[in-house]
Length: 617
Image 1 (cartoon, rainbow, N blue to C red):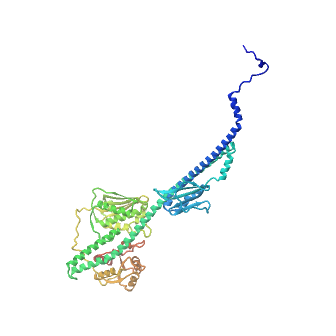
Image 2 (cartoon, rainbow, N blue to C red):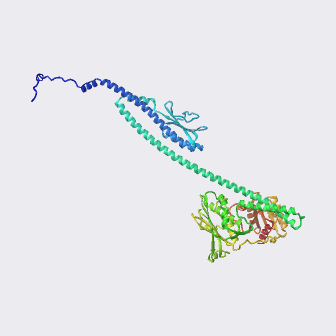
Image 3 (cartoon, rainbow, N blue to C red):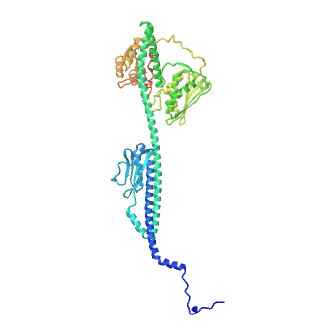
């Protein structure tokens, strides 16, 4: 049942209800709108100011971080350049900082002050010295330093000065922030753009840093290679100096030994034949001095480490022991780039050969192998018992089939062509540059092995290496045969009808040689140099033989003198002598047939036999 309308309702009047809390709040809000708006404006302005301040601080921190990172990267990059005092490399690293236009000044200081620098404006002032310090702002500039260290030691300081945001731009941002919502949009846009720009700048900086790292690694690699090259050069120069020193010492020393040994030999002979009064004490002193001279001559030969033309002194040898004894010397001679390996056969037969000559032959082959491996490699020394049959021996002159001991020297070098192998044993043939080799090495090895009744063979392949195989006859005798030293061979004499010209620049050696030849019965003339020798040959047409030292002054050495003399007097016999075997070849080429060499110091018997042998040929 519906209620009846009230009178008020009937009259069209509606009762007024009391206002709700929401309505009061809304009204109050509307009333407070100006205040809220003002507060909002104040809050927004304050927030804008705080935001601007925060952005300023954040920008400053970001600038500090970015410039600090660049300073640390640059400090790490230039460490090697500062350590090696390489201003050129350091300048390149500093110039790379121009990729960041905010960097106004980039400099590196060492202990002595300014090392290198880069300035956008040439007249920009720089401090004389800089020490590592905290980043600081000065007159719209950010200054950052970083230490350059190596192994905990401070080598220098990196100095970066960067441009900061000008005050006018900050004031403009404050004004924009005051535009409330527009400022919010602008700030968002500006922050977004700034963030993108900063991200691109960081990416570019990272890329530049990576490039600098690559450049630094390349520079370090170049420095390492340069150090290795310098060390190799120093080693080469040292070895060259040692070679020149030992050559000069050997030449002079052997000249002295020639006079000393020859004089002692003459005194001993005169005491023996009664020309001088017998004196046991004097004889004992002469014997002691003679033994010392012989040891000195042997020492000179070992220093030179080259094969010499001398009478062989063969004895039973264990090649395994001989090779093992050479390893230390080979290691010092060949250097660290050559790895030496040995393959020594068990139960190896003994051979009968000259131990010193065989050592020199193996050393000569090892040095040749080293030269064939300029970048290093392996050297294999191998011994083996072999049997050569008739088919093998038939192709080699004077080689008998039978048991042999094989010692091979194999390298992993450049190898040799068939044409080079065919000429390898020819005297004075060499593939090395002028002044780098005499061409006597392999020919001397071949001559020694053939004289010992053996054979030498070369196996080589271009690009893979070379193997030199030395075959020495097996020695069946249990003990070394003895030589009857009490009955030496007689010394051959000459006659006054046989005239000899002695050419020697050392007065004592020349006088001793002339006296010796005169006592042997020859007619002797003398000259001190090449031009004087040619004059003597002109004025004495009856001269049959010229005995000349190789190291002569006056612009004409013994080799050149021999060549010139043989051109003018084809029938002239020539014997060369020297205190240093390598002096025998002063340029590439071959000694003509008939020219012989005797190495100082020589005995009177050696000289007599050599002169007689050449004259009778």
